[in-house]
Amino acid sequence: PKGSIESYGDISAQTRSVLNNIKGTLTKLGLTFGDVVQAHVYMTPDPSKNGDIDFAGMNKVWLTEFGTPGQPNKPSRVTVKVAGLAAPGALIEIEITAAKKK
Image (cartoon, rainbow, N blue to C red):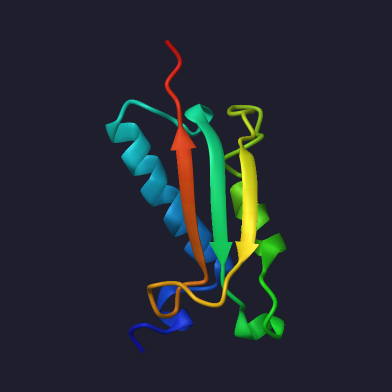
């Protein structure tokens, strides 16, 4: 159903979706993930993980964009477990700060 975790997908699918959206915004601004200097990651309890966050699942997708041979930058990151997010069914929200080098 709309607004359910199943409608958005598991943490891997949701993390990939959020990172793809961020990448699109960065591209429009002439930036890349290499320009990201800080990130705040907000995660809600995952019912399939007995109410824990799926940090490993998120981090596996995260590491496809940060700390790779093609993009070695690893921004500072804070990950916080929160009670809920604005969108029902959302397991993750990511806020980034990027800075363009001159």
